[in-house]
Length: 278
Image (cartoon, rainbow, N blue to C red; front, top):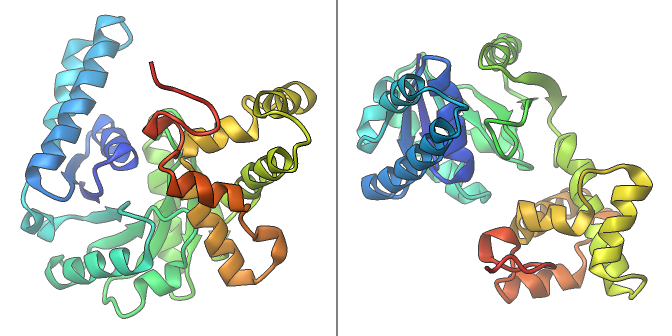
């Protein structure tokens, strides 16, 4: 199968890796061919580290990379599956998918890796059926895929994506369309509430995270988790939850907005509620 993955960042390259590891051809797209190639080079460096540590054979590494292709936009025309994981903005996703809708073969399946947006709205006006296929970071390690049915998603398409998820080594859960789906509807407010506790001066960032790790047996606390996800993404999802429901429990803490404005997004920027700069 040929899979075209649009958005070659952390999520996109991880998705491409997972499909290529199972023998599928993965086309990887970014803002330009040069940008996509840089992401492929990063993937190659990561896999070569696994080879050096004896966790992967050189043969398997080379075979996987040979199936990850960096090509021009038009090469997606004969893709069997298109997965978009571009910026979490409705207009960005719809603009991309509109262009793809015009060139992709009729039998192609369109899937979105959106973490919170409406599958129905993303797919509105497209001739290709749309389904949600939400992977989790880091994609090669995380087993879950949320399979989201929009209002116009055919039942057989949901079943197909469920089976495909199993085939690539993931565990699917079927989710009816709702803001944030299952995981982020629960997880993102957890991060937000950690910020609320900090903002109220109840405890330090370190102690909040230690409390949730040792008191609830969580692998990481809400503030480090938000640093891992990226506070821009947390804020975006909180805003989607609030705008869709108008429920005050989904109102993002003002401190998150201040952090995002200051560029303190977490691990990816080197600083969030903890410092990651070496």
